[in-house]
Image (cartoon, rainbow, N blue to C red):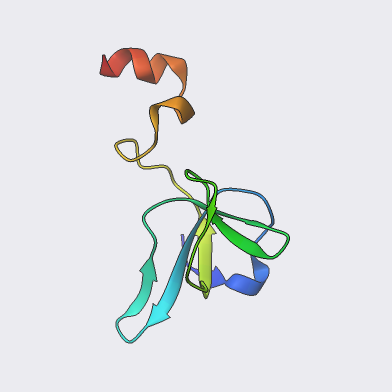
Length: 79
């Protein structure tokens, strides 16, 4: 999936956000959500300290996704 301008980002859903840099778009490695114009780390429910310039749908990375957010059958397989 390609990066989209941050102005088009939907509210209150898990997104991968990034910040434009000389090397390209640098993504954050956790899902973010925008609520009332403020960007939050979706896992910690805390505001993030950067101003993202781009976004795309968060494609959960199984090893980084907290167990509580994974389906129950996925948690059983890991045990």
